[in-house]
Length: 238
Image (cartoon, rainbow, N blue to C red):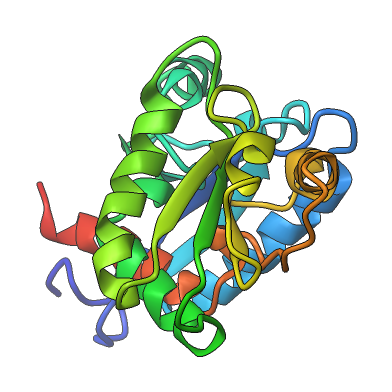
């Protein structure tokens, strides 16, 4: 009997790999984003039949620690690298993981997916407002938004992309004042938390401007498959 066979001589099934999707969540109300992330994990699992796909937000006490394992791959469902992906995640995991992948927002395939999703809704003469988080304490969040915008703009066939931030200048309200009436707003967020549900509409209202707000980038069609491809690629690397 070889190591690849059972006692009956039947081939042994390879051990399923484990990946944990991790997002920030919403500290003030952790349950809705936790549920949404679990739903996304189920959608990703459809494309990864050989993986156990789990999920945890950082806002639900103890959940990530409960799910972590030494052979688990961690997929940060974040829009940028920074404090949470480089400091908080490793500290919370305490070495109980195999690899932490690059964040969702830095995936090189994301601009193309976004352009495809937006194409039917963009009209000549319109602009796209990319509403991003930003940060008053570092540049990583802004750098991710700017990199994404620079790669997205050439794919939109002449539709300009403007960036406005929640936590730094130029703010969403500042940028919105100069946009044409046909503009659309794409929230550069992985999940629809308080920034998207409250801060973004308030910023647009402060500018006395009504433009359609699209679903967050993390909810665009094709995102589960994109995430699955990024995870699957880990098996090709040492």
